Amino acid sequence: MEQVHLAAKRAYSIQINQSVMGDISVAAAIIDEHGRAIAAVNISVPTTRWTTERVEAELVQQCSQSISKSKFKRYAA
Image (cartoon, rainbow, N blue to C red; front, side, top):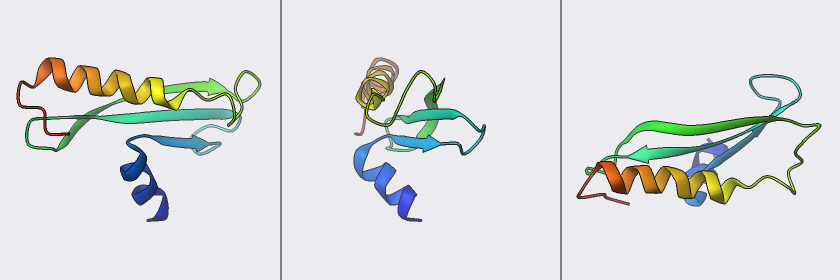
């Protein structure tokens, strides 16, 4: 549950070696006008190309916010 709370606070999640060994995944929710997560933006990169210091999670979060705002006129975030 700690990871869920941290992801909610940051508005994105970073996972290392969770789904695939050797991958770093960054995901952020696309939010509808009621504040519900209805989809997500995710990017996975091999750990040989990214480290936790180089992850550009804020860009993934900005992408999901942009989609949310463009698709839902009364964006709730």
